[in-house]
Image (cartoon, rainbow, N blue to C red; front, side, top):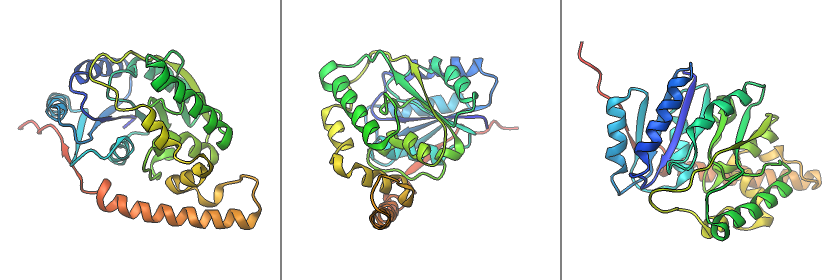
Length: 280
């Protein structure tokens, strides 16, 4: 399998049909095998049956139904763990990411990069509640973690499979995968992408989510280390003994959190929907 499109969905029933049509149009133009994996994150608005309809008519579509709303990161992780493509492409389910950008991102990846991150240069979001907090958060994260990206929050990215297949995430950590990759020696690029205004439903994000991402700026490195399992790979100017202590603490937090994830958040909480095989 060449491509896996992974899409977390939470109460986006009105946006899904146009997103699916645009995605199919893009994939049909690419000379690549592809699968589309939707992770239904406990939707209550009819998104689940809508996704099942896609799967019933399109063999490329698979649907994971999570037992309740676990959040975007857990839904993405479930989709990634159940994907098989050599390249993994996360997207939002609200229709604001444009599938037409996927070929350009793949072209950039083929220049020799391991990660290509989308950059929404003309965001169609509220200035005060979403754009300004995002700008400030991106600047802080880039400064502290020394990986320069303009838009960590853009879900539309492309990853080579080996970059993400062993990553275990929680909280809001999905946005920091490019940092993990860069610290592990992967090459990361950024490419401007389109961003549509939200036509249906309402945003699930805002100032409260920024606060969760940057819960405690002085501790963000430790949170990343725990969430991304990078432990002793950190080089932040502390003495060697302090680095080793921080790495051990981060590894313990990661192991504890991963045990909880394995027990509750991902393993066994979803059902697969695959189209029935045609009778012979």
